[in-house]
Image (cartoon, rainbow, N blue to C red):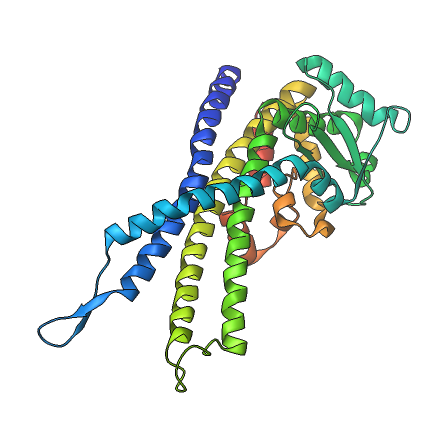
Length: 334
């Protein structure tokens, strides 16, 4: 019954993940509309019969500017997305310092990957190794030409063949379920919002440090305060959008880690071996030196998930991975 449930859950997760992914462009466009509405609200108003200034929003003006802005936003996001989408393989490889290996260079690793690919009837992905004494692994890529499984030297040195097969099976399941394509896409969208927020905050910092009052009067009134208001509103909109995109990406990642564990256990035929591998990796998760939070979302165990106390609670709340002990407990039930 559990096997049938796994297949049903894969289909359900795929459908839900597509719906969640569609939220990203909606969030970006919604952020722009709210930004225009707030600017319109603070820029328009009238004095009532009691002499009080009352702000109001002209929806017609907001929608007009929003419609004229949409094409430019779509073009900009599309260009950005296309560049990141097709260059992600080299970006990830450079971020972690990985290099490819052949059967001759590492027959043990190559044979394990090849045997598992034969079991599940999938094409052989590229195999990369990172010279890192810590333990970690991840899958990446968007199509058959770019699909890659990356492992650390520490992982190969400390895991036996069965445990290593369980980890490789986990990563191959991510590829089979199209998780890597989905996660890379979501990472790109989060990166777009994050970069926009960084640019707005930098502009606001320049205003605070250097001042922007050249077009106002000598008392500092005029375009300066208005410019600051626009930036503050922009930051608020960006922060809200960024939180929503992060939460959306977390929902995608957490569900799929459980499915990858189940698929990896099925491929290697030994759930306890994968559970043992996860326990070893959790004791010394490597690749933390990459310094790329977006790339770290792909790892089998996030290096920062091992914090204790209050930080452990915060990491569990906002982590892209479910709790490792829960993953191990589920595998040990098979």
